[in-house]
Image 1 (tube, helix red, strand yellow):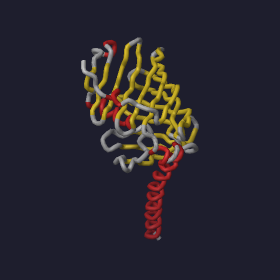
Image 2 (cartoon, rainbow, N blue to C red):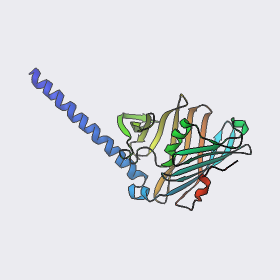
Image 3 (cartoon, rainbow, N blue to C red):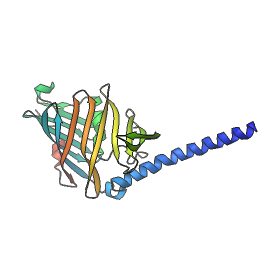
Image 4 (cartoon, rainbow, N blue to C red):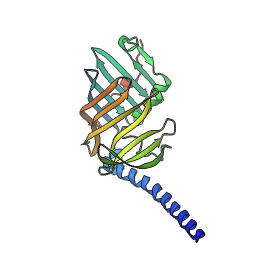
Length: 238
């Protein structure tokens, strides 16, 4: 009798493990479909996002330009000063005003900052094409965020630290991301997804727990496959 119980428990464990593995793939597959499907995502070559940031009582306009998989430029205006971050292939540079510890001249981006910024070359998140990118995705369990059922996924990129992503169990869109930034845990809350050219983008983001406190991002406009002058990614000479 004990042997039969042991075999039954072992079999149940194997069945449970198989279901878990399948569930991860099902969740990711439904997530990709919710974003618009792989055909629509693969058709996106450039994305320009015009946002307004609210931080410490200031409203900061920001424009991020992405050539998918190749280059990214984010430019913000803080109290009349321009702040620029650029990733171009495997290199990065930035411009920081004096009020943010810079000189106002172009400078190389530190290795850690470059590593974090590389993820912005892919505007659809870490779950899309995760296997092809060498990313490991594990299902932690089903939980609740703001009284809504979510799937809690642990996502470990090939060349970066693990993050936690929470996929809404109804919409299959990411509603929250937890990550360590500069030694501090922060949360990114994503909501109000809107469709542009058949692809969904979060119109509202809020970062909670970072060094600068709460930061809200509200999207004014997203342009997909518009013209981009790739000269904007080249580091200017002083």
